[in-house]
Image (cartoon, rainbow, N blue to C red; front, side, top):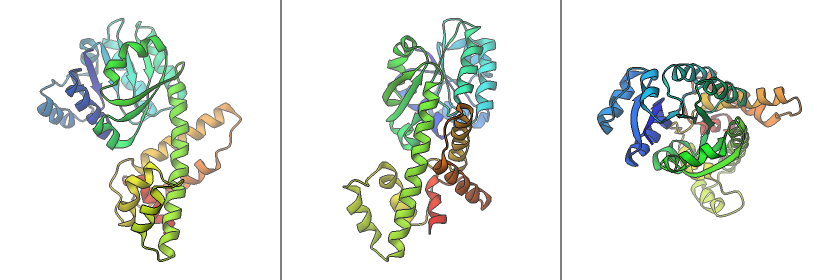
Length: 284
């Protein structure tokens, strides 16, 4: 399908590159034009002059931006140019309510919408090994399965519109707990004056082994925190999780709230653009 990508940050740019390799990429757009121009040089794919222009020229529009308001603003502009029968997929992490609003806006244009947040980090986006959680009409997901397989190794249908975002909230809450456990455990090991490389090797093969420790353990022990998933973005996601819980009226999320508070301390100290493994700074 002729696919346009809106939002060319670390995740969006890598997804666009993989769509290009698979022969699907048709147009690019980014709020900061320089990023779009750089990717255009790399791929020879034209940059649209506006979101409306991109939407008019593509059968499938993939959105990857940071915040709820950004998604709604982008969808509003897409609606001005898109043709009936087209499909919009949002891979951003936003609230369930935002996904439902976006779907409602596009339904007036006879355009299908899927909320399809992803997990797997920048590494997953680069290697096309993301896991994608889809909310919306399953028949529409079937139509775009081949295109989405260019960016994701695992594509799971969750349920009606908003279900993808609710599933991503589950993912982000669990990530908060894993971050707390790994950083606290490794900090304890250092205080015990253990050989931490040996500790990582020993733990990796057991019940405590996990993706986060495998990919971030050595860098956090070295005191470096190159951004794979930024503190300020996970903080934003955890705020969404807690708001969704309040709206549902039946859930308390103490671990999530504690992690959000820890991230606020890191952001106040100037570490908001570091990887979430920077939580290790506090644990030490």
